[in-house]
Length: 208
Image 1 (cartoon, rainbow, N blue to C red):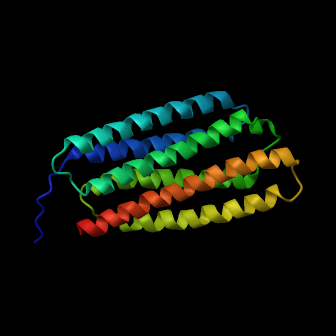
Image 2 (image 1 turned 90 degrees about the vertical axis):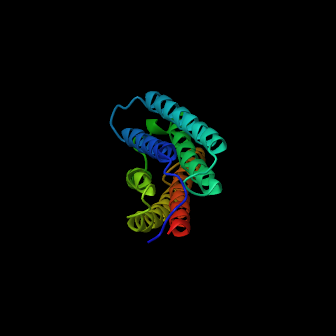
């Protein structure tokens, strides 16, 4: 039987879970951009509010690390996981803000591949939110990081197809530049979800 001298400090797990649920809120807001007649400024503003809340959660996590003598697992891993969850939210907020600031939602329609990327992000967010509470027991996480990796590959394919679409001549040069910036943020968010999963895998291996 394996014994652990680490405390079961619930606050860390709760903060990780809160941060992950904010990512679900973020991707749900991005999905609103596909709805007809959507108030794009409202979506962008609400994304900023969620991002600010995520920043606050990250600050709480850092304070907790600095005030806890013995942490549930390595301090560096706690810090890394918190930072990476926050990074995902930053990319999601950037997508919404750029779509609004560049007026891209005024186009007849956004490229199908852009919606496919948002759908991938939505799936990644929900799976991540389901996985965070499992950190407490460090069980049942294998399927999480395997699926996140699969979705990241799916996102890469959608990103490549989006680039093909953007450079096909369908859009004018300025619109291409704007949409390319949004596409890069979408891909960065997909990658950031995978970074979170990789860190969870590292933690699970260390604690097994």
